[in-house]
Image (cartoon, rainbow, N blue to C red; front, side, top):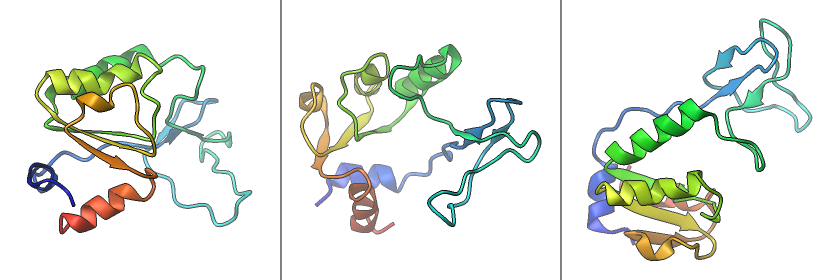
Amino acid sequence: MISPRLNQLLKTPHPPASAGSWAPTCRKRVERLGVAKTPDARATCEDCGGLLRPDVVWFGEMLPGQILLTSQHAAETCDLFFTMGTSAAVHPAAGLPLIAKDAGAYVVEINPQATEISGNMDEIFRGPSAEIPPWILTASGL
């Protein structure tokens, strides 16, 4: 069961999040990609033909400075913050849930196991991050 506070926050309108990919060759951004039809399908840029890279930071890579600043600002100004599928041990990203909490956000952790910051969370769901969010939305009536 989800808490009444989480249910209320989920039903509050929020601006859409942006996710996508980009082509390292020409730096073109692609906001959304469709689902690959086959496991070996590779998304390519319409302009340069290069492979598209998901807009994520892999382990061992540095988080781009502007992205970090934008993320910190979002954490400082949000009402609801989800942290999912992370050890919460790799900084600076691991500090974002605590920044949100310190700024007054309701912070929810979704993870199979406890993390270093679990004790600071407002609500915790143990399980896979691919399964829990759809369950939360269903439980909230969304």
